[in-house]
Amino acid sequence: MIKVAVIDDYQNAFQQIVDIEKHKDKFDFQVFNEPFADEKEAAVELEDFEALFIMREKIGRASCRERV
Image: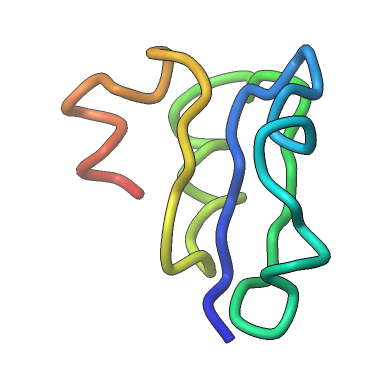
């Protein structure tokens, strides 16, 4: 099973566009609705995930991507 972090879904849009139940045998989704305090917190929280589903551009900075 692939662990997927859904980041910055403050509007809960992910569950409206992806049928989680349909994919539950292949993917373990964890939705993060609140932004991380800083890049260090993001790196710690996301270290065990194999894939990131990025809802907004905040995690897109190169320095943060390198840490994750």
